[in-house]
Image 1 (spheres, one colour):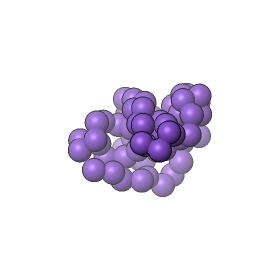
Image 2 (image 1 turned 60 degrees about the vertical axis):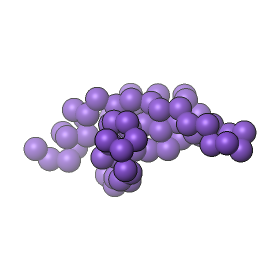
Image 3 (image 1 turned 45 degrees about the horizontal axis):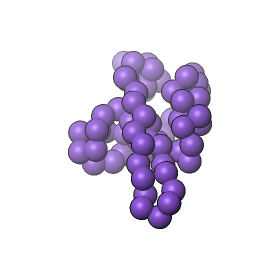
Length: 65
């Protein structure tokens, strides 16, 4: 399976993170912290939701643990 097919089959979730300095970050992730293999960070929920709906996903991954 190529990377594009793999990315389209992931069940994405949005995780809301309060950064402690009065700002909120929204992470689109394929799992919870410690279980995920990839996540993408956004400043607002709408951008995160639009990314999930987009068919033009980035080719590069940011891995998190």
